[in-house]
Image (cartoon, rainbow, N blue to C red; front, side, top):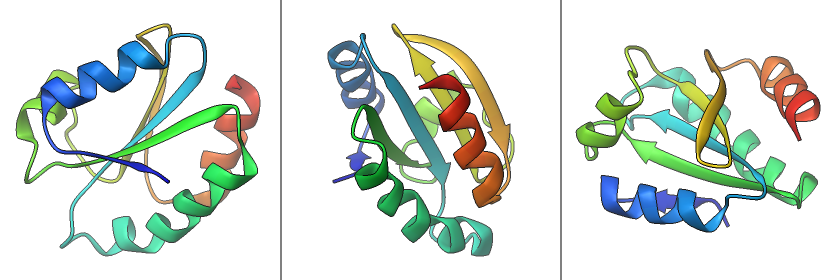
Amino acid sequence: MVLDIANKAQLDNSIAKCLNMLMVIDFNAKWCGPCQEIKPIFSRMENQYPGVKFAEVDVDKNYEAAEAYGIEAIPTFVFLRNGKKIAQFCGAGETCLRNAIERLK
């Protein structure tokens, strides 16, 4: 199940628990069409990549987390390892997302 991050503290806690694995965070919003298009694909990827942790942050509900990662457009995917950002891209491209996960896992 994709983690639904409610606030910055929960995000920080989740990151701390995933230090030895790749974590992918989907920053999105309910009103964003491309965000809603990629959401079910992102959810399915969790089953396809068992060694990767998937989380999502609604930027309207969790502005502090979005600001902490410099999110300026959505959807934006942030890739973390050992608590550090190692990659980021903006857009709802399934191929780009899949390629990034394959490259970074």
